[in-house]
Amino acid sequence: MTVLLAGDIGGTKTILRLVEATPSASGNTLKSLHENRYRSASFPDLVPMVRQFLAEAEQATGKPFAPEKACFAIAGPVVDDTSKLTNLCWSLTASRLSQELDIDRVSLINDFAAVGYGVLGLEADDLLTLQVGKRNPHAPIGVIGAGTGLGQGFLIYQEGDYQVYGSEGGHSDFAPRSGIEFQLSRYLLEKHNIQRLSVERVVSGQGIVAIYQFLRDRQSAEESPDVGKIVQTWEREIGREKSVDPAAAIAQAALAKSDRLSEQTMHMFIDAYGAEAGNLALKLLPYGGLYIAGGIAPKILPLIQDSSFLSSLIDKGRMLPLLEMVPVHIVLNPQVGLIGAALYSSKL
Ligand SMILES: Nc1ncnc2c1ncn2[C@@H]1O[C@H](COP(=O)(O)OP(=O)(O)OP(=O)(O)O)[C@@H](O)[C@H]1O
Image (cartoon, helix red, strand yellow):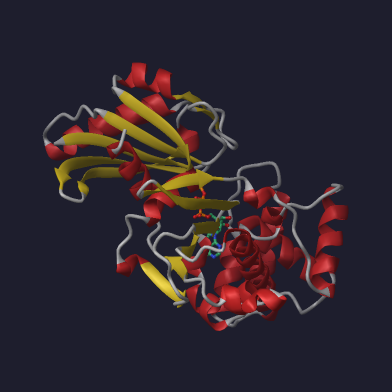
């Protein structure tokens, strides 16, 4: 039996989990021992957070823990086991963490690579299937997920096992497909005074707000006082810590069908999200499955199921019959990255 430490480190929150790994016929059986979540910005570095977590775990269970292996999934690029987090002033290297935390083997992986490992460890209940398709067990698997940003990754079957690859696909160009999407693209280029538009600026939480502002500014529908107030508060707080979450407010108003502008916003967002998932599918032909992860999809499930998500995903002209064969699943388990980090650490 081995004690592992898994972490999912985001710009906003970090979740840490202690896991017991027991060898079994199918590899390792993992059992969660203790878990906690922390506000990332409340700590100057990961080391004091892990020390506090281990002390809390000891207090809660009455026994001390000394993990032998650890894997941290990080929202940002990881190069040579080193990462500088995008939205935090943390600079992490596996060797320093190993030394300061006294953990033999430590690995840092990109958060979307962790989601990639995690999809291999999901149960049927963790998924909602949008399209059954025609699954090929050894074909590539694609992973895409809108949250604070837009993550993309993929898995390729090699030598009897899937190898997982992160990517920076969320930073590829937004490809408008209709008059209104071209107008949105021009609006954002001019607004931010930029030369090119990443798809992440549209397909993410910030994208929901950006689409809302675009539709509001062109007076596409009347603004409701409730949602309008939240968006205006957020706009006043630019460059400061935010006290409101306008993407959540817009999505909730759309779900409740209480605000036409929010409904139009979510319709455009979901259309663009589906289209980008389809772009990833065209590049990978992921007959092993296309997994829609990220924090947003499970929160807007009825909208995704009832709207144009799947039709935008497969509607790629002559390629439609190929994309109809791709199994498409929404990942409902928000801890898929943590599951992936635990699985990865068990193999270190
Ligand atoms: N109900 C909701 N509907 C739509 N978007 C939402 C909702 N609640 C939160 N969001 C948006 O989801 C984004 C956060 O996504 P997620 O929960 O996946 O976090 P994350 O990307 O893992 O971030 P981090 O790890 O940095 O905390 C934010 O942009 C937020 O505005």
